[in-house]
Image: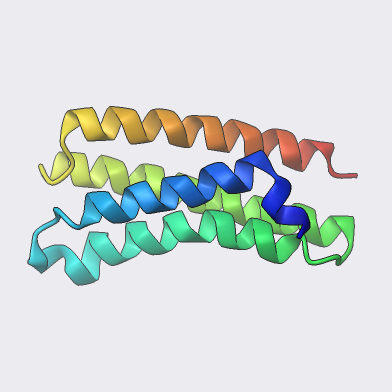
Length: 115
């Protein structure tokens, strides 16, 4: 399928997995708060790319890429919240934030390239 060939989608899948692994270390009392939120947002990056590439119009694809960007920004906020609460270690924050920045730059470029 078209979306599976996109480097940004592949990176997003890997990033979602890394977020999932990170949340396995979160305290149980965060399960329905930050844990759920960051996992859903991280997964939404790749899911929106896939859904938007379903052969609809370019305008629709562009909109779904925008949804992916919003999800990425939500993940960034969750990482900051987790760091502030002491459940995301600084090294994990730095590593994941850097990967997210690359994904977001790729998404902005992809959105810009869509007519």
